[in-house]
Image (spheres, rainbow, N blue to C red):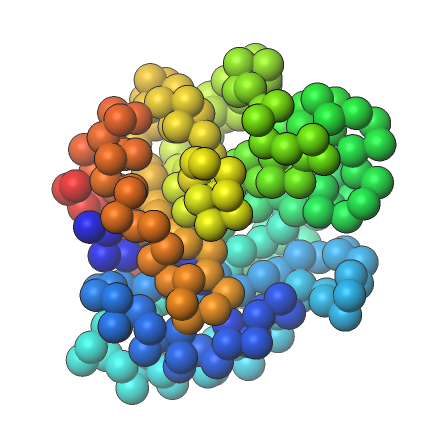
Length: 267
């Protein structure tokens, strides 16, 4: 089973109330060897239900390094960030990433033209159009900004399709998905398997296995695994399924990051 959970949040993210220590304790109980906190930093996110998704990074780093030392004999705790990317933010994101000693950087798309697919009204343009627009924005983001390690939950948008995920057919978006995956492989960037898709009842982890297969066909090798946990009980969620997902997609290894460098672990 996978022993590295590289996507999790604590009370330093505005959508979690979990103490960092409780997340670490749960990871130890579940047999994790290495974990990486990836708190949210989404510039220009308009407040939703009291959430701003902008971590106090100096305080986050201070707390993490204190706990990293405390738990060093039991688990390795690494320092990561999940940045919300929009193409026009590239200069601000570059300056931010270079200001801290992150081990790992996830680029994610939570907003498209300032709108989150989670918020009512995003799909007013139509379901297929909303999904296509989301993927188009990812391609634009990667062209504009490259200081990240993996792209997170690549098809996050399908969680919120009003008529349900059954209407999502990867082949409907083949051209733009291929463009995204070629941008990632050409720039040596990875994908994450995000098992929150299983938790949300989609029937698959993000991204869909057909996307993982295509990434591998195009020469992609870097795959990290994260549960996107916001509560201790969700750490390593459905990790027992990930080995089969990886093998079915053609991977013999998965990765974790330290000092922004990928390390490969045989399945």
